[in-house]
Image 1 (cartoon, rainbow, N blue to C red):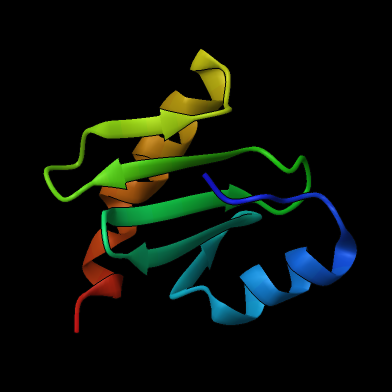
Image 2 (cartoon, helix red, strand yellow):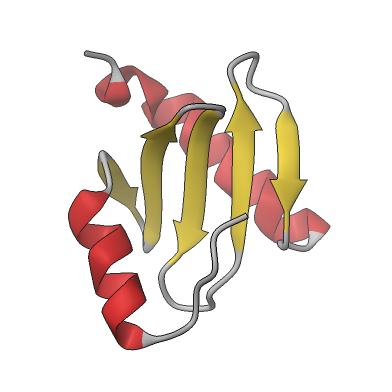
Length: 78
C-alpha cells in the first residue's frame, strides 16, 4: 500500500491519477487500480478482477468507492 499523508504526496497522487471522482484519485498500477481519498488519506487497491486486494477504508467508504469505480472505470481504458 502506498504511504500517504503529506500535502506534497497528495499533490503527486492527484497529478498522476487517471481520473478523479468526488475527491478520489483513481490510478492504474501493476496490480489493478489504486484509489486514494485525497481528503482523508485513506486508500484501497482493486485487482485486475475488480476485487479489493487491500484497503484502509471502512466498509461504508469502500462501498462508495466501489460504486464510483464501477461507474467510471470505462474512462480509464486506453
